[in-house]
Image 1 (tube, rainbow, N blue to C red):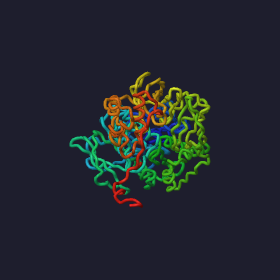
Image 2 (cartoon, rainbow, N blue to C red):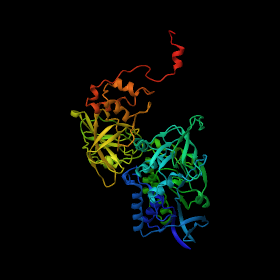
Image 3 (cartoon, helix red, strand yellow):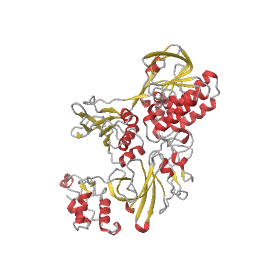
Image 4 (tube, helix red, strand yellow):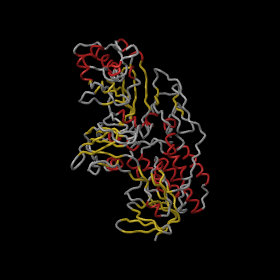
Length: 600
């Protein structure tokens, strides 16, 4: 039986960082991982990570895996056993695993379990049909093996995994019909949600899936609204034509090996379900066994890496007496800082249940605002959510973006210092930064957007300008495309200045005409035909097409229609009549008028 000073079960971000730390402290370590290569969930993540640059912010997940793997391969104290499936942990720290059809046993002084988590399932009618996948399974097929399991997707769950999957599917060229969320708010980061909404993917809150339609495979789905008790509301059912349903309703830690090792396990829903009880240095109730990553609590890969490092530092102290006290304290402070924002309230609450009190750093969250500089090419920061990330501040070569010591502060731009270089746009993991310059003499604006789709637009091309919700706003003309090695390119386009705060994405025109007035389902083509027939008065266009006559009263489409009229006639919007606003300004029931008012 082979003897090691430390055994790490699981080669994901927590296990890899743990191994590197142990190896650097002279501890003979082996990683056991059941996959062909280590990296865990990182290898299928093509998006850029949040956090700070010390923890690989602005680096794509698979690139982080490559960097960590390179460090491990250079460390003589670390051994990696791939395709090794751990089947049990026995007394005396004996770990049993299988490889190539054979059983193997090893012993270690200390064990780090970093087995991660598995996807939760959601019961609904026909959920066993081929075509129903977990979100992680779809990412594995698509990003690791280049296999696309479907062409039209419905995603259940709006946590970060579901939102990221939707974006990656669109990058791969398939259609995402909708994201369905049972809660009344999006579960993941706003910047992830905004990315997919700009691409036209609706996020249906207070909805759930009722049934998958099909005989031998998924051919559709029935969704419905739900009440505050999560019961479906009769009469709200509707059918969607899809061939793939991806379930993304959360993860649950894989605790079996920890339980076999004698670690006490308790149900703490805030952390993901059943989790091993441990102290702040990741030691479980078995003093020889440590945990890290999603097994500890369902969080981001960044916190998993920090936990893996903390566990390894404590293990090194036990094994060879390494003086790691200061390193541990520094990592604990960093971890507390990452968890100090409003998005980590649930995690902090869960940790308190096992006796771990997160002392929130006194570093203040800064949300100051500075005056904008109109007419100058500068960055526009649309990151208003307090999440742990300072990629923009760290990337700016001119010190024009300020976040401060607390990573959870929202970024603030000093437009006077901004040179318009676009470095921050390229660095932002949430694609929440744009470049803007008003061309006041010609009443246009130039907008630069982060663009991660193929094919890339070319100079002079006409495209559609889309709103934050993915709706058509106006036509735009591409001025230039700036390419970057990390594939977050910047596309600059010009369009009427009236839409500078509305347009947030560019798309190639589709064969079908986009809907301009959603209430009355009036398309761009219908409006243009009326204008081409010689009608240039807004009120007349309104009467002929019913644009702006729906429940919203034109709040969503009036300016868009005026923009179309301006483009077709060459008359600036400021010179056009915008029609007459008539009561009621909001929809009311006819019964209100039947009852009469104060004067009857």
